[in-house]
Length: 312
Image 1 (spheres, rainbow, N blue to C red):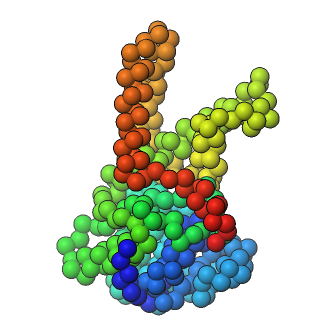
Image 2: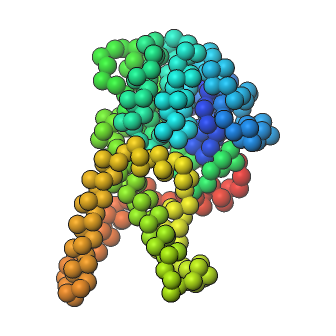
Image 3: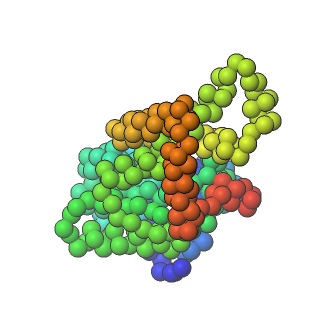
């Protein structure tokens, strides 16, 4: 892992939940920032950040927080991007970099690029990492190790902007992350497949189990096999964040949901007609995908990783 030294003298993180808190801890641990300011709308969150001692300055005033910041990271639910952006835009200094950590990128990019930020480098981003935990205590510096961070920069032929993208890439790589540059619409389609649709399925399955009249809640909890436990872990994720994800990436999610529905109907037919060959072939192909994920180093018990280390 490279240690590039101080990349941004002052970093401001807006929103100190799991990802924002992990960015703060990782930046401090790897020595890539000198001063850290946190802005959070929650008085309880601000008080906890002060208690944890993970920031140099904590405030509820976004404009105050971003003043003189070299890097500003928006780590709030994606539907709040425009509102947060309107508050920070007049206060940001020329030459600063503005990024985010949202799970959808098209809506975020549109919101940020609509702001009067002519002299600020706007580079939307998405670290693909997380647990089901939330709040200032949930973050930990190792969250991004061996994970991908996707940046969706504008197609601007400008040396200064390219240098800003390269610096932000170094920032994420210093945490142990791998960085990929991608078009925001393609990002949203990929995330609909690998993240958003699985979460929607998990929320639905857990809800369906809870609604079954002939199965009690205690039985669901008592007899949960590993598959259902995995679904409940995913379905425990922050509801505000996921509400915003589905509302801001609805086109890609609906496209993937339509494809999934067709595939599910095909599996239903195979089961109904006792088509053992189709079932076996499908399960064999999907097992190979799982093995590929493990071989690529992208398998881990992310939520356990955070909990096993306790509160950070």
